Image (tube, rainbow, N blue to C red; front, top):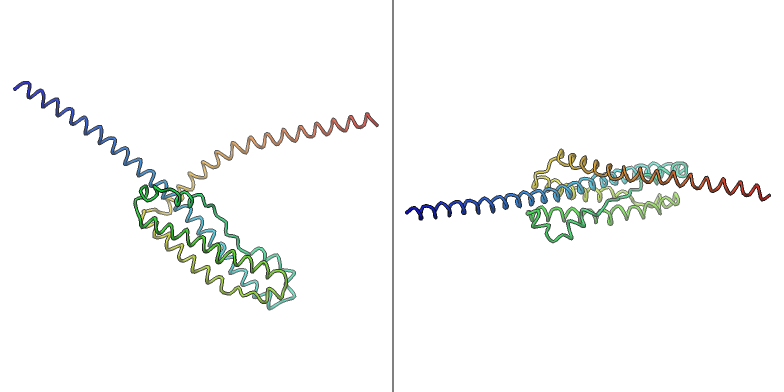
Length: 239
């Protein structure tokens, strides 16, 4: 009886030890997975938000270009005087594709995020972003640059439809963005915190690099000035 009790006590202790070991490991792995999921979601959401800001600037430029075009067509004598204003309002939709590349090329994206609807919405956002760049902004750039070459070409440029195309794509991208925010419970303050953390890291890295580059640049200037002064002195002695 005593041996049986001893065996059962030992078995219970071993069982508890195993449960604690595997349970702790499972908790740690789950926490790690949640952190990876959150990091990927924040990276994608921040990229989407910044792309929307750039797209909204392009939309504003196209509307401003149209307003100025109407004014200049009505007053042809102002065409050459205000030509630079037209150039300023030709949009340029620039964005990095790092986050999109990581999102699309990582086969573990769905497993990491764990939300197929989010993956579909984010993919749709990136598809529309590319379409907006190619079908609206890039096409407007080509047409507008050609139109600024002469009053006659500006007169013939039909830019009235581009703001409508722009708004259509913007609505689609905003809808996908808001849907992703809702599904993953991401708030604006979360994105701001992510942005601040990102900026601090960039400032830290670029700050030390910039300091080293500046020091190297100043030393190089000094060396070149010394070489030039030495050459001048040698040249005077040779005369």
